[in-house]
Length: 326
Image (cartoon, rainbow, N blue to C red; front, side, top):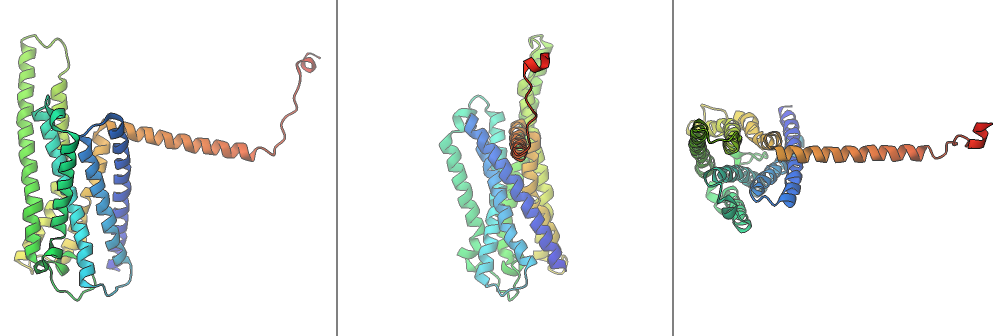
């Protein structure tokens, strides 16, 4: 019964992750094609990575809902490698988004010269290669694998604690420390900009112009702060409890980590598209345009259906102007 409940939760969560991220990816792709914004390619890559997380989790949900089957060790290792690679790509994409916003604040006049197409492509290729290396490390190094006779594919049944510790050191902790550094540096830059604006206003040289630069900095800081908060809230309990479980297996049951805390980490892939659709005005505008287009097509289809159904009805008799005068 517990396996069915977990499978149902994973199915619903994976479906929501796929639907939300595919929708945001389509909107971002249309926006990039119209305006050619290179920085949004990192956000698009984040949506694609989160959608891939949903697809890989859907396979685990089907395992929970189906009857136990004798899965081979290599099959489980490959499946979990795809899951780990997708999660690593999502975390690394968050880092690229934060770095892009940091660069836009630190060097606003050189941003478009630095963020070119080939540099963005090189960063994305390197991201997916590094994510694949992290995820498929147990496939390349069998030392990280644990021999298990259980049919269920899970972290603690397949991987050694050394691999989990390697993943923490290469993925989560560097990302968290880099997030904190970028946000502190952005906060310092924004405070300097606000101080300069206040000095200009006190000198009477503002001319009544709105502080657009400070507003842009605060918006970028708010986006990065929300990303850091959601990332920390989603993944920190899972990683801390996993480290405690490796040090003291009897202190913390691994089933709680896999059945509850891991779901919280996967929820980050659902929060990311919701945050960008809420905070970014461009995404909101494209989403409203898409909704309006769908509504227009539905109404047009309903109108055509009514016209088709009304073809067999008799039209009212025509009355000429001479008959009306009589």
